[in-house]
Image (cartoon, rainbow, N blue to C red; front, side, top):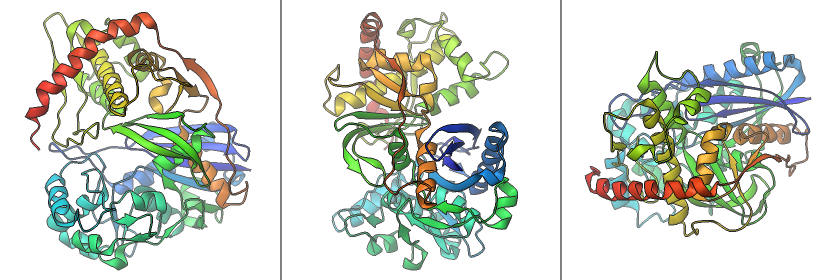
Length: 477
């Protein structure tokens, strides 16, 4: 029996088909269109997530030469902090502001002043849902008032698959409106952002069954009706689950549209490992996607392998070109929603290769900055970091990250850990595996830092830090 794991990422929707022992049978991915519109805007039409989910399920079945009847369960993973308003018929009432959308900065500041002292659990960064809901209350009050439920992306897709209107603990905790210790919504905070208590969904475990695939969803996806669908979890939870069992103290590094670093603290029965957050950045893979589109045809590379080859034409340090990757504000080491991206040091001697490589180096330097801000030494001791996410598919960029940070990286055979974790939630919900089962995800390769390359990056990293310090006062908020 196969299980489908669907991961709704910020820029891609991905599906993996695995058997009940965790062996991967097929994968598929499609890009999700994002409306960046004016500065600070990053919004997705929720219908795009539904269409992408159907597409990757059908493509994965075709690539694996599988029949829909062979799939016995579905699990879901989704990006956090992107509230979806749905009416009684399951229609989305507004576009979903993504976590990197910065329009709600004034609302975040106002909420912090009003509620920060009274609601200690409340997290009021621009990236979480609470300020975004306050923005909707101010700018789209009719949509918010009409909403039957406030869901998260994977919940919206699950609603379309099963009719279920709920969320899980990991996504609820990311809204800024939920107290994990009390296991309840913070109603004072909900009222402050314009949300009624009846609009907040029930909260359950990520591996609980949430219903079964409807006949209509089965016909649209190519699967069979009646199979169990797990509640599903946030992408961070599913990534930890899909990474497999990691030793305490190990660094888990996610390298996708954005990047984050966590230290494993121990086992967790739902997510596989409990981990302490050490920092996150806003644009990593998103920066490369942006520069690929910016350069445009006909000279631009057609895919990311060609982007690697183009960047390799420029030397370490990009002959003096430095890039700050703050394309949609910045999450770390300090929250800076007004931070902006910058190329510096350009001359007539520089070309496309320098621009692309500078973007890659800027992301690597930002990752090193996060590690250092977390108190880690220049060359972290202990076992290699365990790196997952789409960037890991680039051998060139993975090597650059190891060289810049001085840290060895182990890359698993299946780096798209979130979709894999989602599949395991589906298998648990369907009873195909035991409730605390973890699938292994063994490393496929070790990326060790090159000592000579690391030395070559030192001057460039110094320029990066100097440019960061010079540009920080220019942030508008």
